[in-house]
Length: 264
Image 1 (tube, rainbow, N blue to C red):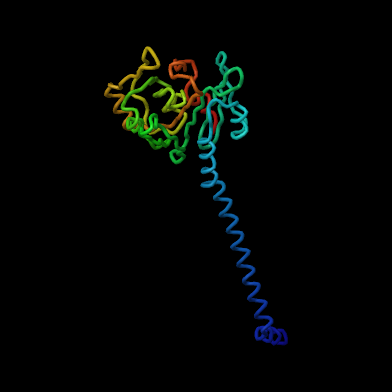
Image 2 (cartoon, rainbow, N blue to C red):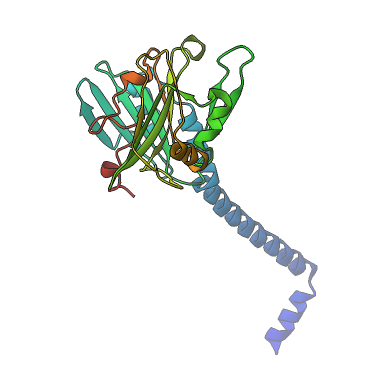
């Protein structure tokens, strides 16, 4: 009974009520802080992390030393030698980056390949003349036919492989001085996110890099309307599309599926 009297007296005490309220507020603040920390960590590991990685791959530049790529991407997972060129493959859960260097370690060209439908870095094309149109492509979203808005269905190089085990499709474009004498390629690499696959084996390659070819094959035209671009490649100045050997056994644009498929 005495204990009950003490408890009842405390309940009527203003000091006790004040302390109780303070404890409730402190407990709530601790809970909110803990929850905020969990939300912050979740953001960093998901949306925030992915956004940061998009910024990284959009900032890459051809012609730089491979040390620049290593500083922002970390060490390459695969390194492959092709004559005088060395291929470096960087692996992230959202993407692959391929950087091909010369003997001096300078990046001759690099490729970004998205591995996820919702990882969509952007690359701006066009503006070859003062008032020329521009087009922004989003990997994993934009289709090949969308580039016709600026390229008018004219390609410098087109290469398509459809085999029993492997597939690859790419289009290369060259615009000389207006594009800083750099080439760019848009591709579908089977290591990345796919919504369809190439339909046939085709190669379009003009005799000189100043020429271009019009795509007239109906099967390829239909493929381009539906297939999303999952790989973007850009070269160092003066490396024209025809100088990159895309024949079987040589360097692909983006990683080799048979090599990277062991990675999760």
